[in-house]
Length: 622
Image (cartoon, rainbow, N blue to C red; front, side, top):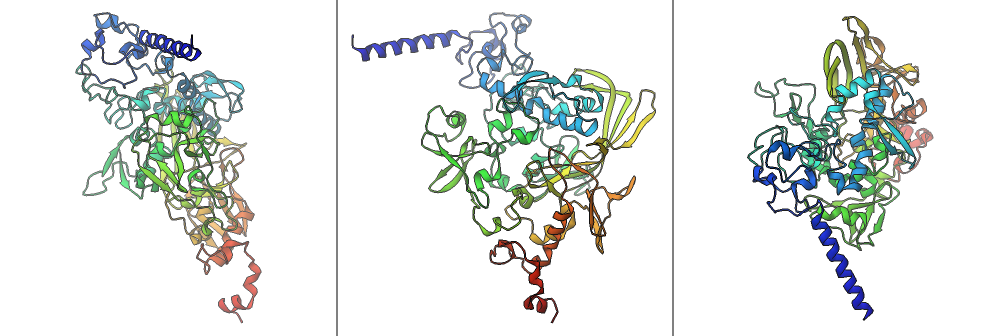
């Protein structure tokens, strides 16, 4: 027998056997009404062309005629992606994605829990997560994540009763414009604002809590991100150009709240949106699936899991974006682009993330860097700034891009948290009401100017209060056992600020004179300059020498820090750095064109030049 014919025959037989195995497996083909599921749920939308019979995802008994019998063995009730069932549900076919999600920060919330613990009580040697699990740390070593149900103290209570409601491991129902399913469905089967089903199945039509449709959404839009990311840092609001301010339902026009209502009884007003939003880009156009779903490692903080950086598409002052050619049909970038409007093909040169992995939608073509809209198919041209004069300013080597290009940074000052043991509240992790209820108020929120500090990477970054908390505790007898207390952090009682990217980027940078001439950018808050000192003017009633909206003071030319910057290795600017920043304004007053490389911007400033004949004459001397 001809060897080539024999190989072809063997291949055909293998293909036939695989096809038969697929048809006989739990992943059936859509469209066949051979179960009692379709009898009751007639009109329900198929999840997708690749998701087959109902029982392949949901389990249950499709041969049973009674509702109770057919539903009895379903995975996770109505949601087979719930963490209690996702090993049998989504995980049966999507093992690679599930293993990433299980250890990713969107599910574990390990970074959030750790930072709450650091803020309130300090670490106890354990790594906590929303659910206890075995995992691998970022070096690939096996580790154990302890369940947050075992985290003692106020930090455990705060997460379980406050923060966890947004956690994707739990269904959040009955919350206007912020509800979502649990597990994978939180993003891929999104809720509408009321959490009601509006598809073609009459048995659940208009009922909550259900996704708005049974059709799977492979590429979530910004509304999905908005449901959770509109609190705390409010990055979803800032990205779209919305601001909830301090107004709650205070009338803003014509005696009525508005113009737009969001969750929590808040109305928002318009500010300038992020330039990427303004151009029509979705959140997922910048963020990779590894940013959102994780890459299989259990990171301590979000900045360690995130792999995208501005420089990936725009370059830095001294280095251009990096690219690598796709050479294989099963390359990760090719596989991830299967649901995109335009797919990646072998031969394309894809940009590399900050971690050296290929983007699946950023590529170079005819010497232009193009970002592909994953959902829309639009092409966005990315301006490369490498070598431009304004991006190689001497002394700016440590600046993060968003230190200059953030239009606004949301800052919440004076967070007063009250924990009352005479009341009960829902512990969402344990699934029951327990003694102890939280309430919060705040003193002030503002957008601009924003303070800068040294972040965990040793770079200059915007920072925001995180968390600037004053704690009051009421015991079971109604006695005040703590009143407006400031927790200890790094060994002393102090407030905290955290490095932060606000997602409100603009093409125009903060003016040189603003940053170098306004001490608020350096961490002094609202202030007055008095001789060789800078005095804060927004003072806390419990401390008349420490401004609420800052972390630095200056007296007799000496700079003192009185609050901490969270994250490892981060800190406020020191005295030498503050004086150097402010001193540069002597020259900026006249040399206000940052594009001029031949003056102060292209070299280290020589302040002795102020004594030459030209400067003496300009400054009124002889």
